Length: 184
Image (cartoon, rainbow, N blue to C red; front, side, top):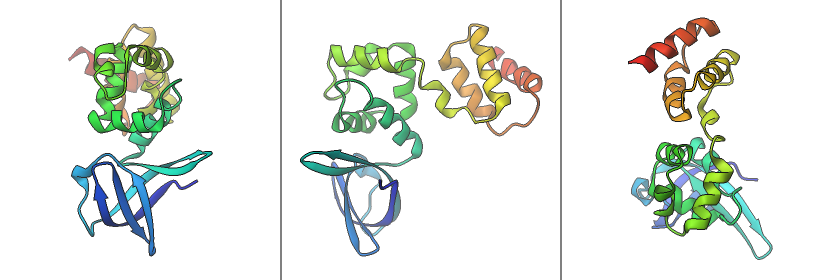
C-alpha cells in the first residue's frame, strides 16, 4: 500500500492532483485544489482503494484527515468518493464535533449524504473519534477517562487533551491542569 507520495505538482484539477515523484506521475483523487501550485513540492498522504475494476489513490493533507477518512469509509454505505467530499467541505475538527454532538443536520448538508446515511454515520462513529488526538501517554489517557467519568462531554475533553499533549507530570498533576482549563 502507498502511504504517502512526496513530489512535485505536475498538474491538478478540482478533484485530483498529478504528482511527479521520481519521474513517475501519480494521479491522486485530491479535493483541496486551493493548496496546489504547479511545480510546488509537497507530501500527500494516500489511501489506496482497490476494487475489481479499478485501483485508485485518495490524497490528504494530514494524517488526521487520513484517519478520519478511514473511519468514515468504515460506515455502511459510505464510499471513498463521498468520504473525500465530506473532508473537502469541512475541517476535521468540525466533522468530529458534529459527529460527537449528534448534529445530524450538519452531516446531512454534506454532498452525497442523505438522512439514512447521516444517521448511520452518527450510529457507527459517535464516541469513537475523540480518542484520536489523545497521546499514547498512560497519564493523559487516565485524565481523559476520569473527565468522562465526571460527566464532561467528549467535545469538552478533546481541546483540553490537545493543550495537555506536551505537558509532563503525574496523572494527578495533569488532572488538576485539565480541571483548571475546564473551569475557565
